[in-house]
Figure 1 (tube, rainbow, N blue to C red):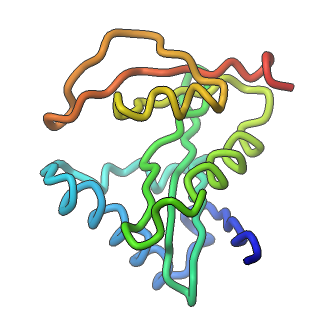
Figure 2 (figure 1 turned 90 degrees about the horizontal axis):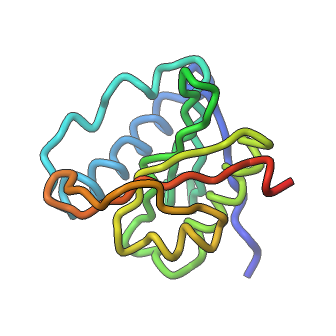
Length: 150
């Protein structure tokens, strides 16, 4: 089986159908499956520096994440999700590795669901604060120092 291609685009480069399917995947995972009622479309997808990364199969997204440019110069990785039918295929790691390539030498931060902290640690992230609840789900803030991973 060949490794899926990771696609990367800014908002203005996304075909309308692809954007719709990416947002649908996010809503399916975070709002429906995890039962978190929150404003999934938060405006950050439109930021000029935001990069959307995803994999797809037969033109349907199978995994997604976004990389945001923060005002302090760090990159924020978020909305990491994999369609239920494609979990266990290594897609999240594939996307994270590509995201880290996009980030380069910059530091990056993310808010990990607590049960995934060890998984993110395997990518060089360290917990930087106390566990907290976000929509009833335990999370921890994490950081990866880019200069340490050249």
